[in-house]
Image (cartoon, rainbow, N blue to C red; front, side):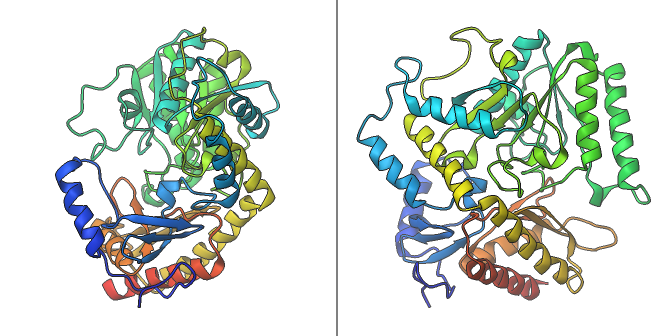
Length: 447
């Protein structure tokens, strides 16, 4: 039965005739390198539901890869955008300024961690935010080198791609990469060597980081260490407070700036406004994008005022950076997160997901690990619970079959064997339970 936007009795037929026609046009006009999870085309969205051009309705647990914490088309955002677009669309902040830019900067300076003076500027994408955060760190410190972590993802532009760890599909064949970028190790407790405790692993990795300054590049040449507080594309890997605080201490010891990449983890996703708050660490610089503006293309770099002022006029920014539409949407999203208590909602969503799959783990031996922070949850699939061999094929089949049954779910991880949950935080309990029922049913049928 076909569903409607008001009914979630899921059974879809994809691709339908209209999507099939569009798929043919897509194949003839769009490069194959642009990947797509669902072989269908959106017609409209509301909250946690998406309807395609053939009338099929999906429960969206992907949220445009974590971009829609506030949901599809939140009414307050739509209303604000409609009002703004009738005033002016883009005078260009570098030419003539506008108040929404200042208002959103003020809000981010207020809500990001730390009581110190901060400043914020805006760009278009997460990758741009990362590149500009590094530019500022280099300018402020007078140093060149940057350290990121294995399994980390920071974008697809040259410097961001160089900082990214996963080779395929992000880096293969696209070299040479930016110089003075290095990788450190990030804890992965589920895959730690047998018998090694989390505490021992943390200490070992922190010791390795100090040794890195002796064997690879001296600390005096390192401008910044950039870290995802929870690794996103890497498989929703959650470090310990000990590890994150240890990295911050090492940064402070050597005059290295700590950059928190909150592009996927920000705006309530992890059960706090920003994931770094879980670790009681205040970063020097933060990068933000994705859910900042309910799907509008905008990103932000926020940092200590003295660091952000290191760049002279004209050295940072861009033609479209901080568009009025993105800024207006961002202000409304932040208000919505507060008014609708979406941070609390993220914790409730996470508890529901974790409870469901922790219980299934005891009966389905393909579930190797269930982990999460707030609503940023993941299920790691394996071929054998003892060897922990990744089960990439099963993961791909689960994603595909769930899509056919009206649930959008995404995969992640270095091995491609992790189901990740990035539903809008406005999803209802009924919608979430229905989607989880489908995933459970698919897992049981495929195993």
